Length: 193
View 1: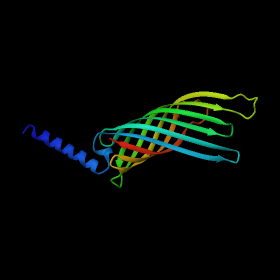
View 2: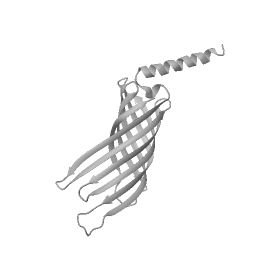
View 3: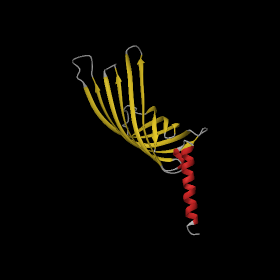
View 4: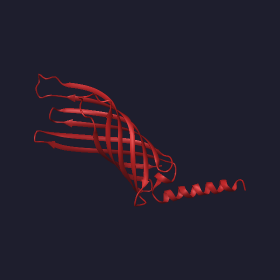
């Protein structure tokens, strides 16, 4: 009898894992991992004088532990270009996030909320049309908090479409300096294992 409860627990856990995989929602049923790539691109005309483009690519790897709680590490690259002064900025980021995944109306749809803390390194270059004005190069870095919400829609048993909307808030900004707060929407693919 002393092994009876152990066998019952193992069978119940196996049934729970099988049920989770069957429901296309691996984020809640068992320990699993998520590996993904997301990105964003936009181009806009500012008045009639210049264009602004922005490209953002973010890769992430997460471990979903229990009850939909996920710990995630991400690294990203973004490139901003403006034709007004022919300026280009490149950002490299690394962040750690905590997510809570919650099933929504469909068996394939999971919503999530995210909070994270990270580091951003920016390299900027500005060139001017006037040949007497020198090219300006600058580098900066800052730490930031990010908050977000999103959804994961399971396309097949282990692959999901992931959409994130994030608010990024730098810490330790100098008074009178530029406002570096930003919002971004990322769309990508996640694979669960």
